[in-house]
Image (cartoon, rainbow, N blue to C red; front, top):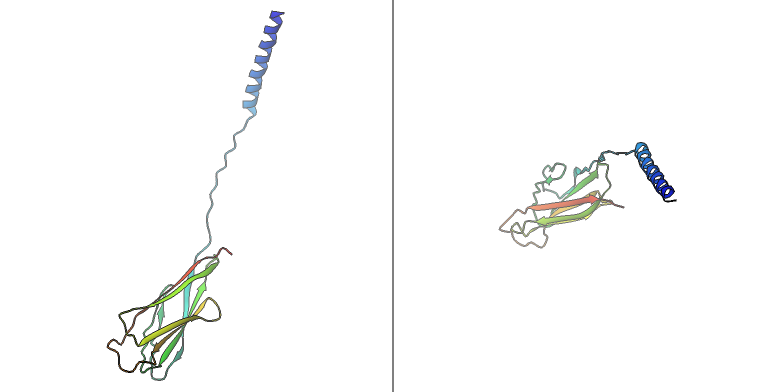
Length: 159
């Protein structure tokens, strides 16, 4: 009886050993390698500037722009004269973009007689920039120039 128990235990150990060898012989390790790449393009830029209005006797100059900057040289003659520029910004890329902010900041050391305002025209891709000789000015100011810096920021849209 003791011999038969030992034989059964020995047979079970051999079966377990054979099962382990058979499992490892038929087990397969799978390796997955891959690469992910973003192939889109972010390309929001200024595509045009039009002079939409110039008061008589004033000079709007020739606005110059790159993808991200606009430079203009407005010359105003008398109070209430103004020049209006229409700035076009387009998304030429493949990612959706939305307007995050639009900030125009005048140089505080410049002429207080030069004022400006901006407003969106029709859609978020066009802005009006109006440079004005303040109609309330009663005498020629000491400083006759003012630098205006504008920042229009777009971010990726998640909508």
